[in-house]
Image (spheres, rainbow, N blue to C red):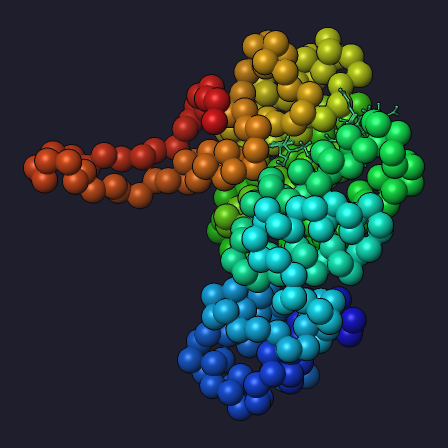
Length: 320
Ligand code: B12
C-alpha cells in the first residue's frame, strides 16, 4: 500500500495500470468528467480513491491489477451475487483470511451491490452464523474476535470507497450506550448513512448518555442513532435513553434506534422517530427526512397544489 493510498489518493498511472488502459485513455476519461483529478501541493495530478471506485462501479471496467488500488490481486474472481458469497465469507472470517474477505466484499461492491446490502445480507448474516457456531461450542473465541477485527477493517475500507458526502449534507451521529461493546452495528450505520449522502459519524461504543447529550448540543445533528446490542440493566438503559431522546428533540434531531436487544416489550417503553431492524429500513427513513422537494401530483392532472413532502419535525413515532 503506497503512501497515497493511506491518504486515499492514487496516481493516474496507478489507476491506468490497475484497469489495464493507457494513461492517455485515462486522461481522456478525466477530460470528459468521468473521473475527477485533484492537484497535490506540488502540482501533481491525483485521483480520489472513492471517485475511482464509483467510476469502476458505473463503467463496469474490470481490474487487471487490483493490488494497485490496495485490493487483493485476485479481486474480480469471486461471486458477485450475495447469496453465493455468504458461505464463502463466513468460512474466510472463521479462517481469519482478511484478503479473501476483502476480495468478496469488494467484488460485490464493484458489481454494484450497495454497502447497505453487503452489511445486511452478507456481513450481518455471516456474524450471526459465527455466533451460532460459537454457541454450539464449534468455534474457539479467538476466531470470533479475529473475525470482528476483520469485519471492522472491511467496514472502514468500504467507508473510503463510498463517495465523500458534501459539506452541505445533513449530519447524523450515533453509537451505543455504556453497557454495549458491539462495534460492528454502529460502524455499519455510519457507513450506510454516508453511502446515501449523510455526513454520518459514529461516536463509537460504550458511550455515557451524558457525552452523547453533549455531542447533540455541540454538533446539532439532524439525526441521532442509538444501536442496542447489549443491555446490563433495563431500568438504567431506559433512563439514559429517555434523557437522550429528550435532549435530541430539544435540539431538533430525529432519533433512530435498532439492534438485537430492542425487544417489542422494551420498545413500548421508548419514544423514537423510527425503529429499524435492518439498515435498509434506516435508508428509507433517512431518505424520508431529506425528501423536501415538490412532488408533482400526477393522479388527476389538476392544478391543485402539489403534494409536498416535509421534514418529520417534530419527529413522529414510526416503525419502519
Ligand atoms: C462479535 C460478538 C461478540 C463480541 C463483540 C465484539 C465487538 N467489539 O463488537 C463480544 C466479544 C464483545 C461479545 C460478547 C458477548 N457475547 Co456476543 N456475539 C457476537 C456475535 C458473534 C456478532 C455480533 C455482531 O457484531 N453482529 C453483526 C451485527 C451487524 O448484526 P446485528 O446485531 O444483527 O445488526 C443488524 C441489525 O440488527 C441492524 N442493527 C443493529 N443495530 C442497529 C442500529 C440502528 C440504528 C439500525 C438502524 C439498525 C441496527 O442492522 C444490522 C445489519 O443488518 C453475535 C452473534 C449475532 N447473532 O450477532 C454474538 C452474540 C450476540 N453474543 C452472545 C453472547 C452470549 C455474548 C456474551 C454473553 C458471551 C459471554 N459469555 O461473555 C458476551 C456479552 C457481552 C456484552 N456485554 O453484552 C449471544 C447472545 C445470545 C442471547 N440470546 O442474548 C450471540 C447472539 C451469540 C449466540 N448465537 O449465542 N460478543
